[in-house]
Image 1 (cartoon, rainbow over the protein chains, first blue to last red):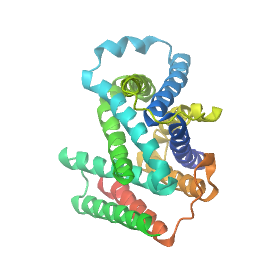
Image 2: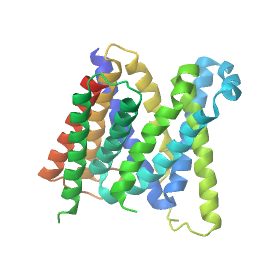
Image 3: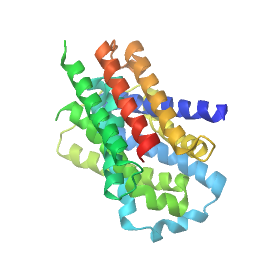
Length: 144
Length: 146
């Protein structure tokens, strides 16, 4: 249990480290190039691992997947390009929190639309708190 | 474009990616789903880069440090670690909230120390208040609403 707690926390560190390093690459080569390189490196690493642990059996599924599922990669490309452009401009902490806020708000909207909510009042409370936090960070960023 | 909106929109695209990729995760597991998403992402960004460059719109051409090219490795590691912890006793809620804590910790350290050559920034009390509000809101959704 403790090991998994540490692992999940370390994973959070890795997520932010990835965003910051992408931002450094974007500063030198541009945000779209940084997104492309980051995806290419992650693809090579994950493909090697997948082939190692799982063999090539799943490659056959490529043609059977719904077309819309390929758009996940396009969304991911836009995500990395936008985040690596924005992060140095707003700061690492604020940038990372804004990413989290955008993700949580979108998730809440999808959950509400698909009726997968346990408690609507709690969902609304969470959304209001996140929106308030975004405004506080925005205000903090505008102060000298 | 405002960098604030760009960062928020990036978060929305990240969520959209998870939503669109969900059928692939169910079908082939999170590892193969990530392989496919990263491949399409590299292709999409590569095509966009070629289009922008052909219009002569790229401005940045500074030399990047070698380690900056390894930006995709943490992303790959994230997929593996998240799969391990989500399927353990801490589950999805535990994984999400601990990852959130890790992300904030690193963001704070990156600002204060100027890690990976980012500009040094000293977060204000107002920043901490904003961070705490967003984390509380996220925890409310993760544990009580979704």
